[in-house]
Amino acid sequence: MFLLLLRQALERIGWKHINMNNYITIISIIGGRYLTVAGIFFLIFYVLFKNKFLRKKIQQKFPGNKDILREIFYSTITVLIFGFVPAIFLFNKEVSQYTLLYKNIDEKGMAYFLGAFPIMLFIHDTYFYWMHRLMHHKKLFKYFHLVHHQSTNPSPWAAYAFHPLEAVIEASILIVFLFIMPMHRLHFFFFFMFMIIYNVYGHLGWELYPKRFHKSWIGRWINTSVAHNQHHQFFKGNYSLYFLFWDRWMGTLREDYEKQFEEVKAK
Image (cartoon, rainbow, N blue to C red; front, top):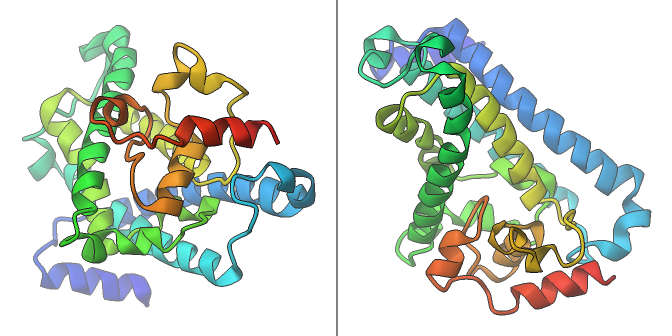
């Protein structure tokens, strides 16, 4: 019944060219990744070893059941929205013919296929940083980003807990990729698998990197769970996703970040 209603809704707004079978497959993959990755981390840190790991939690309190249910509810909506973009831009020939999508890896070679991933990371991090800061503007925050920030003490389930408007913005990075560099469908499969893993880690509530990582030559440029947890707790600073390049360059890295990282790892 739900799928029938969804099909009718798409037809009414003129999206008949969306293949329903493709859409169902896509949301199954996206939803499956979310449930698997968030579920594994939640089971380990919030159920099986909750008491053992409690002392090292970034914020000592645990989110309530209502918070977790809210995160899962909005994440479910996000998954449904995320499915539209690849269904339109990757699996519809009428649209994909205007993108830089290519079919065979041999067309660009394995070197390009592998080399595209670090470029995608930097582009996504840049896109996320500036869209994130924009959504924190006082005139936009409550319409786009407030839902996500209701998780002041996030759990792994918060990774996709977006307002529908924010979900559209987050999903649009796929469109950006398709129009600025040659992309193979497998790029998106592996890239977004990494994205959900790192996103869940960012909302985990525990810091997995070792002591003094934030002081190492590479660690000072890598975003951490402590950094993103601070963003949820205090709402200001630490806007990045994978790296700390933009936060450091633009002066938005919180001054107490390194101190809190050290305190968390010293527990």
